[in-house]
Length: 436
Ligand code: FE2
Image (cartoon, rainbow, N blue to C red; front, side, top):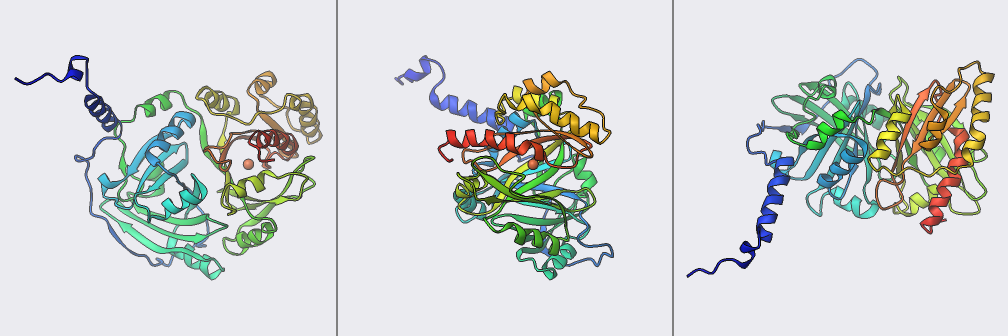
């Protein structure tokens, strides 16, 4: 006579529970046997001979993060920052090398990528740097032509032009090496992969498929965080490296120098940095470049480098909103940790901002001042208007990458007046981590 399973009498067995959990997970990130998979052809790409300026950037195509576990990271960015987990590419969609998730919000596209073997470059990079940004990819008319021009301008190749085609259309990619571990890819899209179609929710690239059931997507639609696009993207480079990389952006990508802050602008009692802002033109993106400057104690740039294997990389992505208060309130509700601003900051900020706005004939700050203080938001003004901004704590365990949430009301600068208050706050956090 068969003995009953003792665990069975007490309810579901651990194996049942694993099975139920596995089924639930598969409902969320389902098995994709029923999803259509078209044949993808991949081959070296050549320029189509477009007549426009090959380095005319159309948009930020996407920002690719290398992470240790893309499936889990997708939940973090969806839950905390309200991204739609829109599409994925993995073993089940014909991608054997890596797993990727496309996260979208407004005109922001973040691709989270994990290597599926120890030999994948993402695996090495996660070991060296932790989770972080690998690639700020630009959409251009002809990726092969942009690449050829950048190489002719002195760029080092990250990877040569490659064309992926399936029944939907074609995506051409090519990459150049930037500072440290960072890469800029050029992406051109035709047919069903055109940028306008992707912006409207169309398929991202060959091997990508829609995520059919992800309950947080509905929640995020009903509770938007209001993030619209990548306003700027800041890199930290080694001591003495800033001017070299300023020239690189001027020569290779044909960017222009936008603003200059020297270490007198950005310093506290203990630490300092130097920063120059490179501008793509056409309103696509600004790429500020920081280097550490000598101070009594370690600067935040130096701290970043030390936890990033002494390798330059992307320090923060600034995500633009048109309603700073609503965005920050929603993000706080979701558990996002922001930098703590000292209470004393609000004692001086309104005089400073009002004086600047009045001197240049601009309207005063329209947002509720008490609410700005309650939400711990930073305010700054210049001759063109004002801005509201706030910085998250690091997005991963290492004190490396973070987000900035920024709203511009005329001002096109970067919160220079906030640097001192901000750095004092940053130093409190560095001190808590034992890194000052
Ligand atoms: Fe910034």
